[in-house]
Length: 456
Image 1 (cartoon, rainbow, N blue to C red):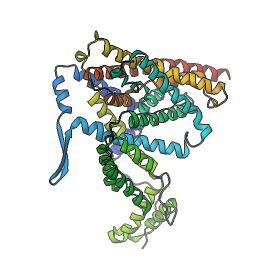
Image 2 (image 1 turned 120 degrees about the vertical axis):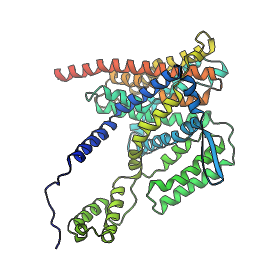
Image 3 (image 1 turned 60 degrees about the vertical axis):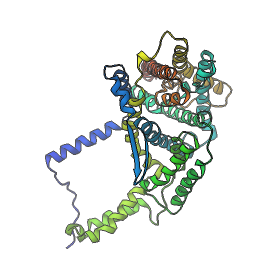
Image 4 (image 1 turned 180 degrees about the vertical axis):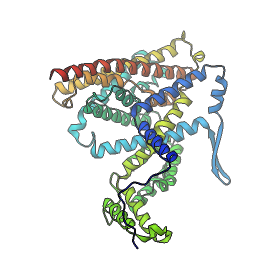
């Protein structure tokens, strides 16, 4: 006798129902962009307080703990700080690479005319801060950090914009996302060309082998993301051996992630519908016959996976880990600047600190607004619908939140520990000031939008 479908929802125990509601609430909470920015800020604050507390020695000792990874007699040992900055941050750059890949395929970078304005604005937001920094730090030792204030932290900037509420035009958010992603493209290129030492050719064959393995696996239709860990590790190790920063391996993998689902003989949605119908009318379900259920459940699993293209599916799966584990860990490990270690009376550290902070707070909005105005004036682009110059200025202020990427570049740019500490402090001070100014201006901008809506 076949089992008849039932339209009634089954009752579950009260504790289970309460748990399910709590998990659903948590899941919605974790996808609020403003929350990840606040978590990142909290991690930086904890690091700063910890590094200047009586427990400061414990803070610094923690990140120098040796951590070994290996199989059998082969082991690779590095400090915990290395595994966070060069290992886990590769996953962050993987997500950055996938964001760039999506934008090139169907987003703000898919059409030249559509991409021209945010590309130009992002370029202005890189050039102006670099020039302001170099004007205050022309000395070759300090000039190495010219790229520190050119970066924008996507999560933080978009999170601050989300705090302003739903009154903010959707096109303004899209423009900020496009600008920040293009800014990341520029930052990746800067790291590759200006902050990689002399390249060792021995690493290229290993990285190349990893890339060929990825291409071959994609060609034969391997869709399980975990199976790409091995070739990904080869690319990472090869890039590390070349002398380039190993996190660039994440960008390479992100750009190679397919933007279309794996071809299937039957449409994935139709497979889900068909298998669900078969299971509903199948005696094996009632009998819990594992052998009979194995095949349809496998088909259902594959179809569910292929409904979304890999670039969307993998990015969505990694987002909570990047936003709530990797980036806060990075902030915790690197934002702990000992204020006692920064000589505020010394000339060079103070020039670095002021140069970075000023470049983020003044240079970013100046470059973005001026270049955007020139592009519109010359009719090479036009403002998105519903976006005013007040909104562009808001984007410029929020783009001054450098944070994660700026600190990352600072660690590549300064060999002198005192300059590095001053640079980190400049990033924190500049990013916090940009966030406060952005929220203040944003509140005024939202009020203006509300008044305009009432009068129209």
